[in-house]
Length: 462
Ligand code: 5GP
Ligand code: SF4
Ligand code: MG
Image 1 (cartoon, rainbow, N blue to C red):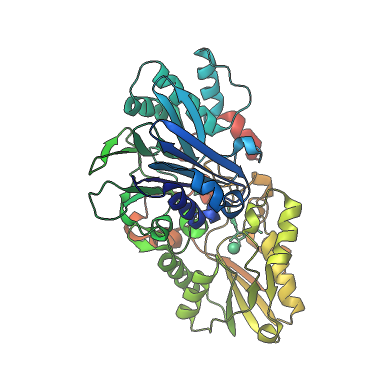
Image 2 (image 1 turned 90 degrees about the horizontal axis):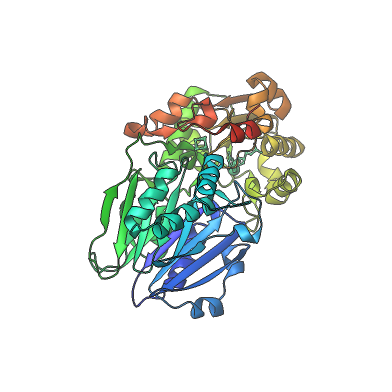
């Protein structure tokens, strides 16, 4: 999911939030929503669809206030229904709050039982709703906002990057491991008291905000109206475990992590891949868009020319994000078409960022053969995905993951390629330089940094 929030008195916060969400659209395409606070009054607008479908000028103009919290949803837990759209707005004894969440909790059963024991009976609800209930309960039990937010966060296990607006402040919070990213920046002069929270730095860029810092893992940052500086506090101390898949695939290439754009990181892993698994060929082709930077790196390092061999229909979104397998399969054909003139008679190296189910690669290889490729070699700029994610990336259950079921030689056959190689885990991590120790790599090695409840494990693990 994408999370974006603004505190900017005198600005059109709803419009700023709209553009921020637009920049984060790749993080979720199922639903979008914005809540705007004017004092302690809240206006909420959310619906299924893309940001541009959910909002128009008229809707945004009616949303007047000094703070906004926005969300784009990518369904992980809970089905894709409009009642699961975010932000959520809840009422407390201290007034309303709006909450937007990126990530996935892994103790929802326990959390639901706890809330039930305290007299809150919640039937079916998303993990985000459980966080909101926990916060509501903490406030109504007598805590002030900062303490209530920390108390609610301490009950949660899993991945949660949050933006929360209360009647007098905006908060950004990351789980103890910082599994999902979250950054903040300022609008206008530093110290002017106008702040932006975003899942990725590309959201800051689009509204002209300057990057200040990451919200640290286990940190709560409060931005209050009329205060020149945010108030930062630690509510939890854990080892940082940022999702490495954010670097490999999920986040936008123009977003910056650890002071560098992901474009640069992805080019570097492409270079590394060429060194680890060289191949003799005539042309390097990247699978748009996510495989392109690594393909450029592969080409630079190997000396094999980079060429456009695939044309992408700009109007089709991320295939992976469509909820059903049938839609996914149809989606790939609509999305990518090979350039026959470029490919015919050539030995090609196809570079992609990842193989998950193998559907994309298999279809692509067929299309390249039909277009007359003489040899097709696949190079993947991440290790084999062998384990499902429980922390907010919808990589499906383990039996759907091709590398969980098949050895590399079998995958090679299944895809119909002349050769196949994946980047090593060491390569992937070493390319992240000094951060190498600070990642979750569970989908590549099964080392889950946070224990997952049995009920959830059973659903996804073979
Ligand atoms: P496959 O067809 O193997 O399941 O999907 C692999 C392709 O889907 C790659 O091109 C990758 O860029 C893309 N992809 C999209 N979304 C995701 C995602 O959330 N996780 C992963 N791993 N790959 C995704
Ligand atoms: Fe990211 Fe994989 Fe860890 Fe999920 S399991 S958080 S996708 S690295
Ligand atoms: Mg891709």
